Image (cartoon, rainbow, N blue to C red):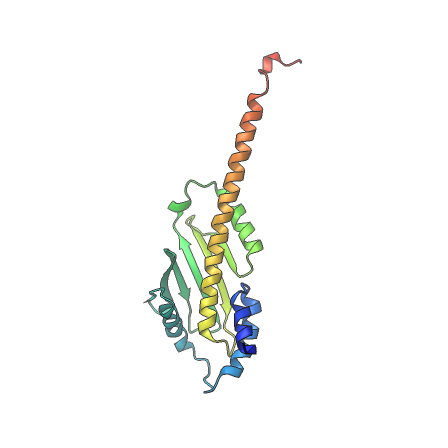
Length: 195
């Protein structure tokens, strides 16, 4: 296996966007043969092509957005040519899906997700829905194909971590409430306690 193949294999399992960009940009400089330069007008078409090759069935939605589904979840890539160095991958869910969950618990899960996940972030939007994001800067020489796939994986991992943490904290909360209920039932009636 060549050095290039080993580096690409090692980068495939890395989940930190910042750790990923510099080596892949450096590696891409060695792989370039035609000296093509970065042009903002090619970013969304390239992302669309890469997602289609991976089987995501993406669709372009207006000037700045691509919609695709990842494991049934609606996801988006946002890119504006007037801000050519910034790329955003996002998944949003309406408040209906989290209506039965305590808002304080949701904030705790968001905080834990944001602290532990390096690339992805979770927050509650103005309408009470959940939004998950992965942001990246497009450095000169960064190949968009690997960056797109890496951002998709980082977003998928953020969603999985959030929902796993939500389940764990919900179960812990129910267990604590159950043990609190049991401990209160073990106490004698208040009129039988010494004063």
